[in-house]
Image 1 (cartoon, one colour):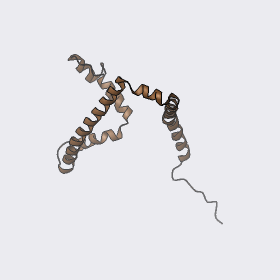
Image 2: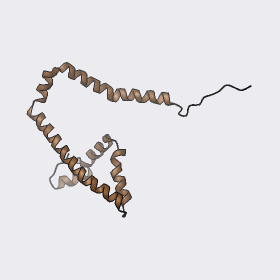
Image 3: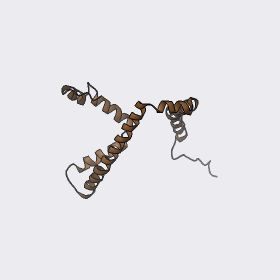
Image 4: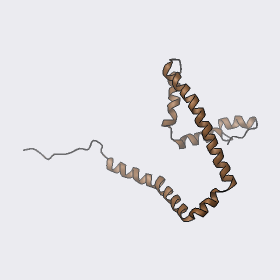
Length: 138
């Protein structure tokens, strides 16, 4: 006579961790986006157009799209060149350069933003150097 069959989950705690993840996703991401959509829906098309159709908003949009175009072209040229060099040639420091290319994929955007803010703030390492020559970066 055999005992009871016990099925052990290959991932114990999956239900609990999934529940916590979905709850946090809802609180941090979905709830604010829903609130923004609801506010926009209550604002109406006329109110949205009135807000968007301002000189300052158009200037900000123009600057954003122009800089993103320049960044995309810059990244296209130098990214292809860097990829070519990393694949074709062996040289000292190649692995470090390859890791630096992969770093943005592993680093959350918020961490990068906080780090850059800390660096370029007036009391940051690069901010102090810029302040000495009369530049204000952040």
